[in-house]
Image 1: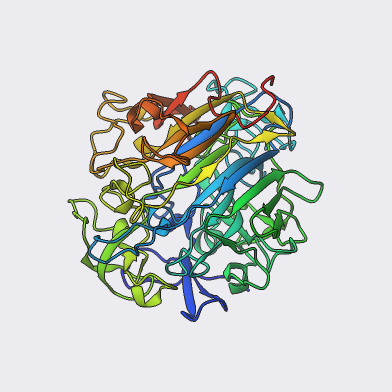
Image 2: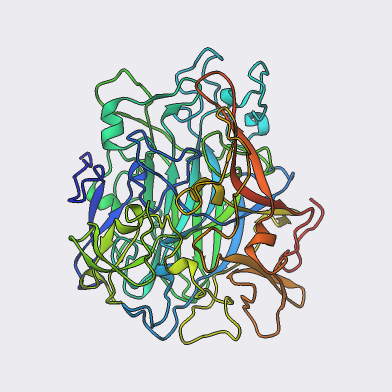
Length: 558
């Protein structure tokens, strides 16, 4: 059964609204918004600001990038992760209560680039040449030249998609949560059905049913078998409906080993819950219904190529990136922030906000995306507050307040969650010797800071880079990553400059602010339809010449 779009009463564009129901909670039917063209909150950030329908798309994704020249580092990673615990004080509608994880991030994830020859930059070929096949797990896919006459011009880059191993926090509406108290997780893969060299999008039926950025989606299950087809053309309601009898549910505070690696059947995720002894897995395989939406602009019907997804690169560096994403990375941890705003009244479940909540300043240009995808406290699994999930364009919502762990001194454990804690990844025991911090703020800050000049050439702004700032205008606070070292062991914590995972840990907060940590503007280039590359400032990035947070007894040689 094909999932069709329905119109919300706000009259924005049609949204994919998928009904969810979980037998684990008496709250009953829930909804999740996973429509990338309409700014669904769980999508990879594209380099362009508007969808094919002309609607704004933007997602705030502060990230850590991991670099290694060790063969296999680009396609096989193992992380240690501790899920955060929500504070004892529940959130209150007037903002006076605690801050729970569903308010800070509808998801956080571990990511890697994958092959998809139906995805940008050159599906179907162009005057630059035919589509270049993607050889999985290989650095032969590095096409990172801005010269249109070069055989490695980025416009000839093999087609790529981006994998995200996403974790979803408990406690609120089914648009975010699977359960009142337990976490769930899913393997998602985002593609981009456009030829960037010609500007030609996929056919209208695909655009109207799966969108310009189609997403394969499958929950992590206890037996590794998908509940229903993962590809967006054949997906059913069962694809998106969490099932506690089949899916891996995890407790707050659980310690996990998360492994991402390639197999003959497809890219595979495994999760070992060391706290409970449970195991979960998902493989991006044909058997699990994964598939690539066929790029055929002349077709009248959207179709899918049943195929497995495999990682694109062998290594991870500044040159292993996709051609269409705002971020310029391969192996990364990222947090999906900026997606919760209090709202005091809504038009209906999944609708728009009719009475602004606390903090919402509603400046001239917003009152739009940050007031959409709204759910009432009555629809919640547990916490009875009403709020909205779409992009907080003016940076005045909960994730931009001093409510993160380590964002205040002294800490406030009654109202602030302990941080997400994770290790730097390893590849067969080998470490990643370099890291970078990256935030895509220039790409998304045009509402409160319209004078940010991110276009360098094709098109060009008068003074590229001028007025692009971190933290963004409107934010009281912007989260960062802190290295916590105790003895010979180091782990990452996300939050404020004092995000501490152990009272005795030594902290490295990289200058103590997001401004210093994420560093200067990053110049990236992308294929463009006029035959020349487009240069843009989409991100801030700070590259370190070492990894200051290596795990216990890791191999430092690679």
